[in-house]
Image 1 (cartoon, rainbow, N blue to C red):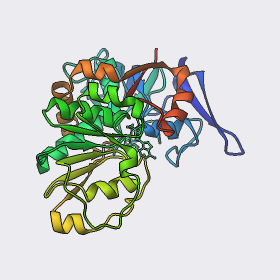
Image 2: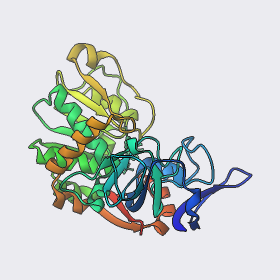
Image 3: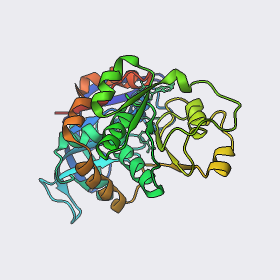
Image 4: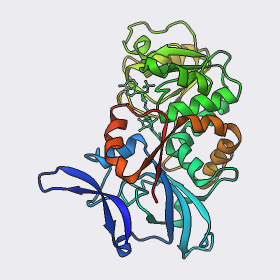
Length: 327
Ligand code: NDP
């Protein structure tokens, strides 16, 4: 038996999440079994702990889109009992059981070895949100970050916190957009030098372009904010679009920034990243994310806290990174 957060669906379509004891033979098919040590809470986890947001295929379901732990058995030559591993993506925790459990079984192809320089707790303090923030920074670098502050939207959230800390560590000036004025000290601690109130970017404008302000942007919000930001990016600069915390459309966007300023909109997906790209991103995280900054983002939690935390993250109430001690 092992403990897990199990989401069940009633005949009326109502979902409820609770911690339950589960028999090991109910684990899904896979070639590697892992004793999960830590997991975390991402925006998608909020959906999967709650009504599912169309992501969960079958109930009862164990959510948790990422985890880190120790291999206990493996039918794949690449992994042996005792190996420390990390999993993000591949729709684990959505269309198959995930990391909110003391045990998980997955395909070997879905795993990466625990990156050198990180322990399992730190790996989940980073988690999918931080891993994706690093992918975004790498995409901006590949396209050239222009002079001037790099804007980070949804800055006090998981993706935004890690992006802020990495960009500041790399020597960029960081302007952090937040709707939570009380998080100013936290964001400055992570390395932001400028705080932009969310309200400054929450109204659409009919203007085709605005003053050029930002050397690049990591955007976790989309919606009206992304429509505005595109009009404020400096000539030839790029926006790495990660998320949709503020809406699934790009509202008020026009073609003008693309054709008059050569602005790039770079799509970032963490779920289907190939293995080599995953290794590169984790290596960069170990090198370019200062661990004392990561520690400032951490809020500890247990399996029992997850139903509440799932609801909180959907309301934009979670600060930084939640680290769930699964054991
Ligand atoms: P969080 O909830 O931790 O952060 C989102 C932040 O966005 C909030 O903290 C808040 O920041 C801001 N925000 C929330 N609601 C609104 C709103 N209505 N308008 C403007 N800003 C808002 O989530 P994560 O950081 O984990 O994820 C952020 C987004 O990235 C999500 O949409 C998620 O699905 C997506 N994502 C995508 C991935 C990919 O592979 N592309 C991987 C991981 C995440 P503040 O309070 O500072 O304003």
